[in-house]
Image 1 (cartoon, rainbow over the protein chains, first blue to last red):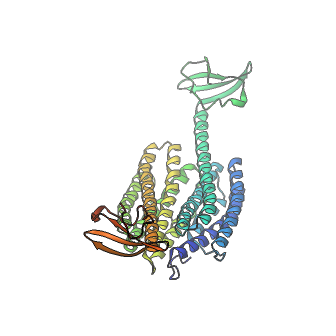
Image 2: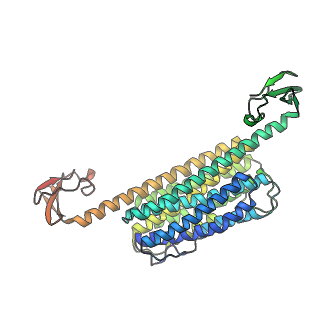
Image 3: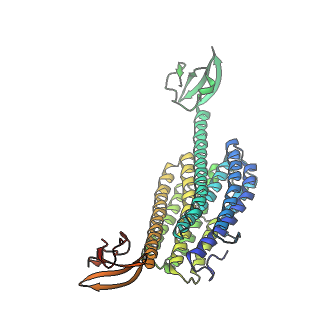
Length: 226
Length: 226
């Protein structure tokens, strides 16, 4: 990439070089995101990658706008950092036995890319202001906000998946069988040496019968979980 | 690096692999930080890199502790992402005409490394909790907090340098000459077509005579800047 060749002498040179660096990164991400979407198994994650792909195409267009506003040539330079991050993400295309593991690693890879961009756009905006280019800073700030929003969405998704997996793991270990009785869902729950029956109201749209209060020690007594 | 070879099947495999990845990254950073400190020209930045070097050595030791707590082999695997980030930082070792530009780019390179680590430690902590290893999560969380604190310090340093440069740029454009008169520092300031004299108290340790209220239009009148 040659971040510091001798032709980078001023803050303006550094600003333009960094624009070229992130322009390359965004272009590479437009190629990587469809592959990540294809591999993701969680529908929300898959859709998240596709939505961010559209945003990323817009980020490329905004960078071209900034190059022109600043009177600089629209040009990309290689950036080994994003290449490395994408290389890790690409490797998720390999065969993985557990789909949940694949999704977790895809989220992690995507967040590494987002944070790389957050740092670079943060510096670009500060440097643009320093150079008196508040017009360029304003355009770049739109992209930075979208990168931050994507990172937050990925964190939320990762956390919800972790919580769901934890809840399911708890249920798998205690639920022996399920049945319906008078419209109620009843779960036969192992609790130490005893077997309990836990029940919930028949309003399936709002009920997650397995993620709430654990059944208390009350063998063969019907308990409300919600 | 081979993030997804077929031997990564469970969340535990992914957790251990990610430990190996960040263990490699921290080791590489212990080699990169002294070079960055040697090149930094701002004394605060130089000291910041040296302080973080000591923290990074501690992070390596903490990872070895986590490997042992988790009963996993202490091992590093190549990680192209951190290699790329460090490659960019290393290139700052080249000759750069303007030292302020070098410092700005060094801060930016260091923040890219910090954010990479923040993402990886964030995932490691979530996965450790999911695996029931709150003991490992707790050790890793100490490092995450230090990485975040370093990132904040770098941002503060970058902003203060940008502000200082902006203040100096304003001064350079308006100050014609400086002189001392009866213990006061006097600045002959161009203001439109007029020349003004601005003065400040002779307490140099607490005074930055150029970063405060601009001199008002009052030709040849002595004005206090502070």
